[in-house]
Image (cartoon, rainbow, N blue to C red; front, side, top):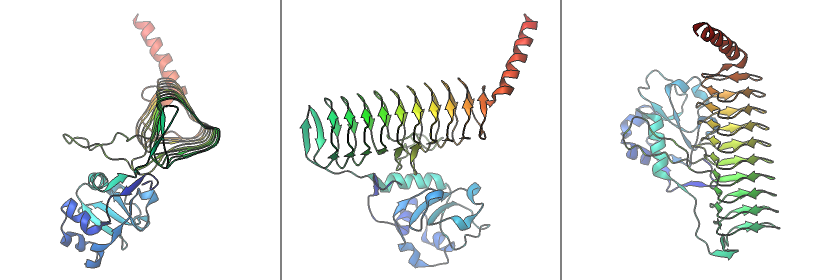
Length: 346
């Protein structure tokens, strides 16, 4: 949960969570040493397992329980729980921890907003609560909301939208039609026309009719010296931030889904699509029209050839190709054999 952009709407206690999820106090106390004082334990944030703290709420599926001693805060954990030793962790039993966790975010979290007076500059609106550096240029019909901080030598084009609390570094060029929300942008960054950064990602409970899209409480963090082409989309993280490292180059019409981590010096060619929670190491090159399935890791210094569809992890220094993806050398050998077979058929 990125507290620069999001907050809890009300104070959140274990007791109110139990009421919302329709979980009895008796069931909760059964797994928490029968200590009724725990019902008034206050939760201050939603977190992933990797970023959890003593005052946070996390969810844990059975497959994540290899080392329960590392779990901090309060855990929504799948029942039945009899076989587990929780090492004095606070737990809330749940039939579907992830769904309950996401529904709690939808219910209790909100974006930080602040009303302010809007100043008219060059037919654009800029909040009087925002800070703008020197040598600032803005085009027509753009809007900068409250508490935005913009560095020096920044150029903003026409019809640009920057939402509350965003941070923009020095020497940044934001071209026409760009939309920026819940984002922290470093120095020397270029964002080309009609690109959308930091909007809500695409997450919902599959198989449930009329399922709500999960509210995303992470941000987008973009490093220094990054170039992003036109008509791209970078979703903010669901819980933790989506991160784009320094010196990354992104071509036109590229999609980066929630929770992705793009390593330094990586290159993403046009029409590439990266699903949620993908991690690319440093110096990774994606040729055009590459697709990567969710939760995939690609090691540093790897190359993925054009049109490849990736469904498994690859280590450092990999050369990858094909559909489904495999070693580029193996895929080329397969193509040679197929061509020979086809020539015999003809």
